[in-house]
Length: 80
Ligand SMILES: NC(=O)c1ccc[n+]([C@@H]2O[C@H](COP(=O)([O-])OP(=O)(O)OC[C@H]3O[C@@H](n4cnc5c(N)ncnc54)[C@H](O)[C@@H]3O)[C@@H](O)[C@H]2O)c1
Image (cartoon, rainbow, N blue to C red; front, top):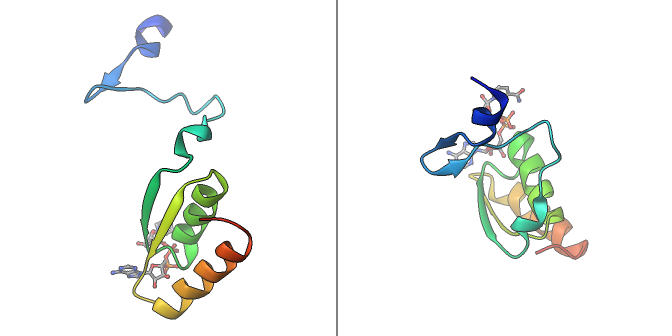
């Protein structure tokens, strides 16, 4: 496939993301995000990244205590 064709490739109508370029995280500002397993591990990392990008994050986790701790920490830092 040529570079030009690759630039315009789509999957289900969505423009292909070029992970070689920095992602534009401003599109996440004030969006609502639900993260399952958000109290620990990979989910926790995703929660932090989304919050820093300005999203309103719902932490969905079977470990309610850990989820509440993360929520308090993020709210304390001014995140939503
Ligand atoms: N950590 C890695 O390097 C790695 C690599 C490849 C794949 N994975 C897979 O990715 C997933 C996440 O990995 P991790 O290391 O972040 O996991 P983890 O074990 O740290 O779990 C993350 C969170 O998910 C929560 N959780 C578990 N079951 C849940 C449920 N049914 N609903 C909501 N929350 C739930 C846990 O309470 C925990 O807070 C796992 O399926 C794991 O097998 C992890």
